Amino acid sequence: QKEVEQNSGPLSVPEGAIASLNCTYSDRVSQSFFWYRQYSGKSPELIMSIYSNGDKEDGRFTAQLNKASQYVSLLIRDSQPSDSATYLCAVNHPTYAGGTSYGKLTFGQGTILTVHP
Amino acid sequence: ETGVTQTPRHLVMGMTNKKSLKCEQHLGHNAMYWYKQSAKKPLELMFVYNFKEQTENNSVPSRFSPECPNSSHLFLHLHTLQPEDSALYLCASSQDGTGFYGYTFGSGTRLTVV
Image (cartoon, rainbow over all chains, first blue to last red; front, side, top):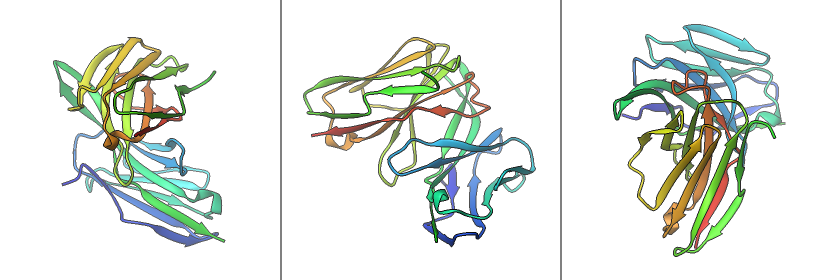
């Protein structure tokens, strides 16, 4: 089972619609959750972080977390062509190796979103 | 300079060459990471440095050799690479080793091995 799994894409929505991106994770002790946006040929950019169950809104973006179901989602309202990118779900979970405990950020495979005019 | 800077942006090297990738963070963070991103694959964590001490080597071949002289600088030394090592190499940093608040990524080095 993949540690972080995203809904298969690509996802295509018309301009002005709501884009819904989903992610599940396998490690129940995961502590923090992120959505990154990556434009073609660029590096990932953090757009949302969420730490507790429920919704978190930032402008047109809403992240939702359900730890019991091990599920994270991202909603993009009023989608714009500039939102067209790959969206990466990332999950931070504590890891123990070499006598040291540290956090490890694991990424899903990404969902390609295209917003067409 | 702000954020996380990586040099060079692009690198083409032969299989017998030796080259180094450089990463510098200006955020006052204490943990730094190397990730590899290949086409159609998730980002793969390669190395973790927490307070300049290596805490993870994710089964990376020895032809990749990291170096972290201080909490602000991270290098990836490359030698006798294979064509399948061609990828985008990303450096990232976080406030501390927990990574609780997420990572900030550099712009990456696009590596092509010929």
